[in-house]
Image (cartoon, rainbow, N blue to C red; front, side, top):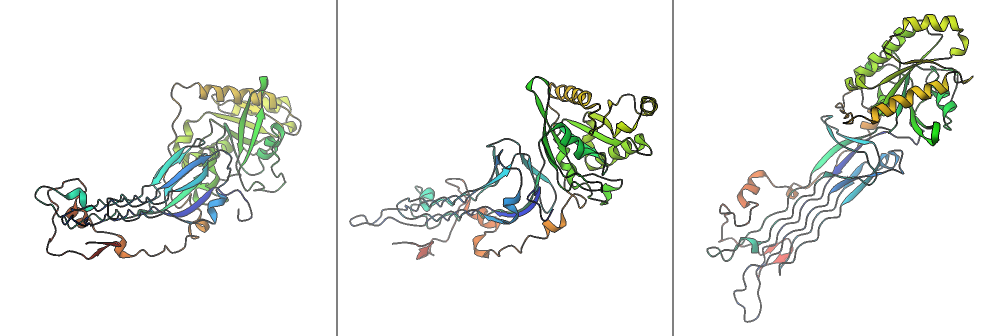
Length: 404
């Protein structure tokens, strides 16, 4: 994957902008000796926003942009002049991107539609100027609110391709050959295991000008959930598929047992995948005669739709399309679409070389943050009666604003 442009896993460090401080300013003008407080509010800190883009197919642009910081809000000034809001940062991602907390592995959000915007991190609110706190009993408030601090979080972005049919099988089961036979996709095909090293998508033409999307993922082996082979890293791409097409070659020692192994590995990755419609395709069936096909059919589960195909000769491909289309239409006609439960990230599903690419976070000045007791002392509600300060101490300067 290091030499490929298809990147489906990225870990980045995001930080929203901190809010600007409110101003402690008093109006002074000729013949106006007691103008009163007129300190403006601080500006809002910038947000970190995710936006879906259907024209993107990889997270490659984020691989070399691991630190994303929004702009800070500016401080308020005299004359009730509000500070400028911090600049928002919009991160463009492919549709189907899922976001996790990098520290806990908790699922946060997902982007599934083109143009959809999700506020990942909220910018800090700007502090209120001292003109908010004037009252009949406190005509010269010599205090203002500081801005809210920034929010910093390391997140993991996973891309889960959007497709109708997902191909699941052992290496050299004929998945790439099938995809190249029924679509215009041209995946790499060779006679050695793990030829496919990244997911492939193909548009399969059907009757009446209709079509559906088929997703081919790298082969999995028994014990993939324990890290063997390529592990379960690529199974995320079939979580959104309507139908799972399990592929077992006809020359396998036990077709039923291989199918059960594949199902077990898939369920260990995400138990919800057990509820998806399944179809079994016995590949390389051109080496079987009718008697062998009948004998093998008796050993397969009765409730499982099974099609004997050969991608080389075209045997059974039309019937396979019919079965897949019926399963897709049945899934689309559900009264309520099946929701996707994104399992939390754990060590089996993480890409260590990507996780370790995060640099040390840039240290933040302690003065930029305020303890919770500071917020309680100042208060966020207008006219807070608990607001208190020592009126005997008047600062000469506050965030670049002078007090006359």
